[in-house]
Every structure is written in C-alpha cells, then in structure tokens.
Image (cartoon, rainbow, N blue to C red; front, side, top):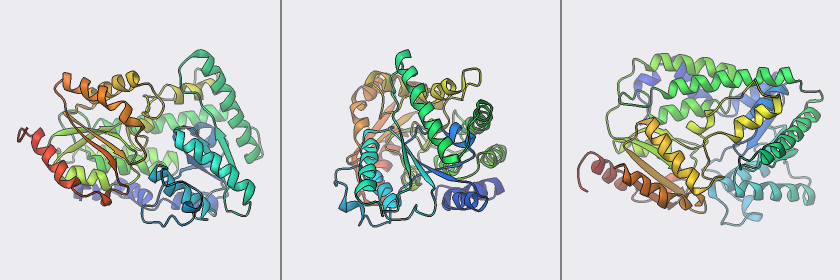
Length: 389
C-alpha cells in the first residue's frame, strides 16, 4: 500500500481521500444545494467560466470494472481504452442523474471523435440519457492570430454557459472565479514542493489523491484541505529510494503508482493532466477577462497530445530538472500512443544528461491486466540503485 499511515492520520488527507474515493458526492451535494453540474471531458474546459456561471465542474472519469456493453455498439475497439470506458458512463445512464450539462474540449484527437459520436447519437437516438453538450474547439499553437481565434471560441463557451445558467456572466464574476482557482493552484504548488528535491515527504500516490480530489469537490474547500495537509506533511518521514518522473498515459486511479512505489521508486512528479499539469499556470487578472482565460490554458506546459516533438523534449527536460528526478518512466496504453512520437528524442536528451529511463509501451488497461510489470519495475529500481546494468 503506497499511502502511508502518517497520511492516514491526517484529518485533512482523510477528507481529501473521501472525496477522491467517492467521486459522486460532490455533484450530489451541489444538486442538493440547487447548483447545476457541468461534466468535463478533456483537460481544457475553462473552469473559471464554469464557476463564474455559478455551476459545479466535475471531471468525467472511467470505471475499470464496468462492462462496455453499450460502448461496443457504437465505438471501434481501437479507441483509447480509458476514453471508451468514459463513453460508456455517458451513454448508459450513469451520468444521467449526476450531470446537467457536458462540456467537451478538443484536448486529444480521440476526444474530438467522441464529441462527434455523441452529437450523432443524440440526433439518431434522442432517448439516450446524454446531457446537453457543448464543444470547445481550441487552437493550441501559440500565434497571436490563433490566440484571437481562441478568444472568440471561449467567448462562445461563455455565451453557452449563460444560456444554461439563465443569466449573464459578468467580468467581475470571472475575475473572482479566477482568484479562487489561482489560490487552489498555488496551494497545490506548495504541496508539490514536498515531492521535489532531496527530501521527499509526499509520495506519488498521496499526491494523486490530494490533486485528484479537487476534480470532484468545492474548490475553496479543496484549497483549505490542501493547505492543511501540506502543513501536516512537513513532519512526515522522508521517502527513501530512487526518484523518478512519470510521463505518458493519464491514470485516474492509484494502481500504477502503487506498483511503481512497491518496487522501491519514489515518484517526484508527472506531466499528466491528473497530476502536476493540472495546476500549471494561473489566470492573469490583469488581462481582459476572456484573454486571461485563454492565456491560462494556452500557455500551460506542453501536452503530449497537442505539441511539437521539440516542445515536448524541452518540456520534459525542464520538469525532470525541477522535480529533481534521477530517472523517467515512459508509459503508454494500447491505442493511446501519441506520446511515443516524442519519446525517441526525449530519451536521447535524458541519456545525454545521464538520466536513466524505462519505457512501457502498448500497455493494457486497467493496469492489473499487464503481466510482468512488477518484475520490470523492480529491475529498473535495482538498476537505478546501482545494481545490474
């Protein structure tokens, strides 16, 4: 078990773990308070606008134990496995009572296709329990012309939220929501300092709980709990073992991190949207409000799904250095292999600096389906400790 007793003795951590383990409670509480719930599929739905509209954002996530009976009727097997499982919960009624609306961002090419499938499904089978959908069609290249186009797109999203909310969203409400989210991100960055450097006091699994809970609970409450657990963790024992950075497939549960940590490795950072990248870059209140939203999402650290190889090489080097990692774990799922385009040059750059790495490609989802993973991780840990080369 990678979550230690010291974490379980923290009341703040236990509250975060409860939100992480029981992800529907936040939406249920919002509905009980008369607040509408917006599901987010994709990692670039501007929460500043959702909060400014007086709505409650929650992350769509997959259930690894759920049958894909409905999904198999509509999606090819070559779709990314996690997204197939997310699609199942959208169309089989699981989210029917939990969500009022669904916002989809084009964070990955496969999510774009999911939007198209859902839009057509609503047309030909309107009885399906799919909530009203809006699509956010970002351009991720950082040219001024493209930023201006993104400002137009995000203003359209604002207008859609206004229609759903039945009221205007003011500039002041957007700035207030931006301030709430900035405080949340700052609290998470302060927590992350206890993962980096020579003295690591928060494990990767513990950090995943702390970060992930925020996708399913009130942001102000999450901020307060993160600040408290950070204070608690300052007295937790220092974690011993080779320090590694994780890059590749997003993971929505602890299964892979627990295996990595069971091998004796210490995860000091990741560039995934369920990890460090989720709180990268603040909303800039000095900019016009829509431009400030675009600035926050467009200028985050580069995603493997929407960036050039050269950008990803430089990004990984920066993040590995900042985290104080001694090694890197590359991990991609079957049919989710976009990141593999970056890996040859990323590995070459790491090797030039003496940083060890290991690659797991075309892995099965969920993690438990992969034979020999534990042994390979243990061998990599031994190599990092100076054992077999």
